[in-house]
Image (cartoon, rainbow, N blue to C red; front, top):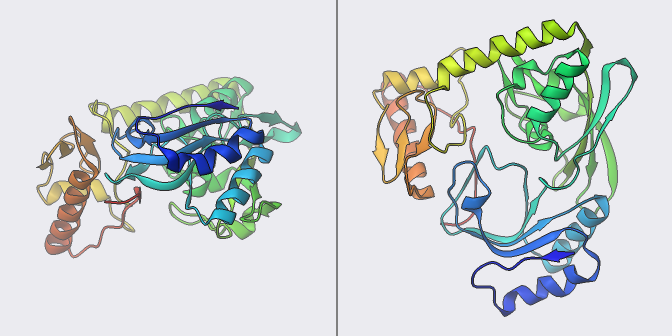
Length: 314
């Protein structure tokens, strides 16, 4: 095990480190700024951040947290996440350095580790002439996170290519949940409480390589046209699209583009993005989110629901 040390580590970390030193294969850090692990570049410190390498590490982490009553948060690439300024108590399980295996099977099938980046899988599918994941060409993040939130774009979603997921239950037991029991819906899937996705079973359609390349190019250009001018740190779409409406359009029509709170700003390029223009705090982003919801409801009668996940303490 590689053990790191964050600023301000004190005796409180010892109750963790005595356990982790014994057999944990991954890296462990203490008092870790979450701003270093989110695309927003915002967030107070996590008490502990552990990087499990396999199911054994993950099972040990879950058992340890359960026995101590510690909070337990799972982190992928941190691309759809806002961490409050007070940081995160307990253990943040960072899945980005393990679970990176991809097993290609016959019939366009694959078993993909939760830590695999979407961009890597999209590229592999392109090279193999496999279609179905082109919509994710511009979506950052990991497979695990994408499945959990049923990430999607341009009329397609993860549910279209996922056949089921492998999990570790809250007691560390392995399991498999078929697509029919995941109950996919808009930006949502259903998992047993406390379960962690370790791998996704996926199926793609065999197509000509040039077809896949052209489709990816088309969608990449669409994305660039809509958000290509956003160069500040952000966490993607802040609000879900209401049925039949575009959240960005509603926010724009409410006159909120360019609205500022501290170092956070409603993007002038795409109104459903809040950007960190420099030194933004979580409280700044949350203030803008509250303003947007109030203004849009007042003017449009529509209640916007957050797509962004918010964790931590004020």
